[in-house]
Amino acid sequence: MNILLKYLRPAIEFFLQYGWAILIIIIALVALKFLNVLSSSDVVESQCTFTKSFHCIGDPIVNFVTGEVKIEVINNKEDAMKMLSWSGGTKSCITQSGFVAQSIDDPEIHYSSDYTLGPGERALLKFTCGDGSGIKDDFDSEITLTYVNIETDIVERTNGIIRKKMPY
Image (cartoon, rainbow, N blue to C red):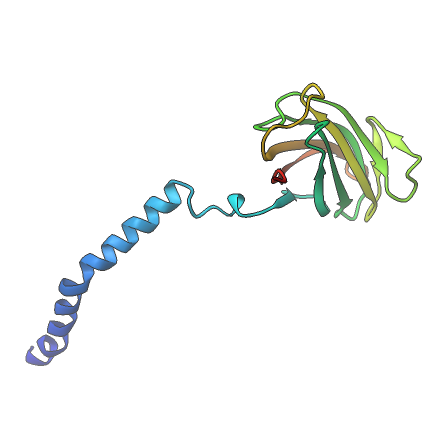
């Protein structure tokens, strides 16, 4: 029993002496995380991500004067996808219009809906936020794309986030 106390006593003294400091640091980190201070979204200049099926190529292009937003995406799946619709409009882009997809391989081809994007094919998605009077602050919006997998005939959705800091 003396041997156990010999090793246990320094451990208890350590936690009694430094435990309060460790506890304060943990509470401070939790508070910073809760207040979103540790979020990278305030630091990131631009971001374009989707949850599945698509991958953004490059940064989003946001025209803050006209409200036009452009993102280039690629089909990550091994099957072709027929695009059905899109919805968006959170935060910076509550009202949107004029959603158009443009073929990267042939810029003359424009689609408004019901277009097929083959495996590995890229498309430029364009839409306008607001009434054309421009975007007044940093751009931050979510968009949902609805599509049908041509091989399985299953309707799927993917969510994306588009962010762009306003140039000052």
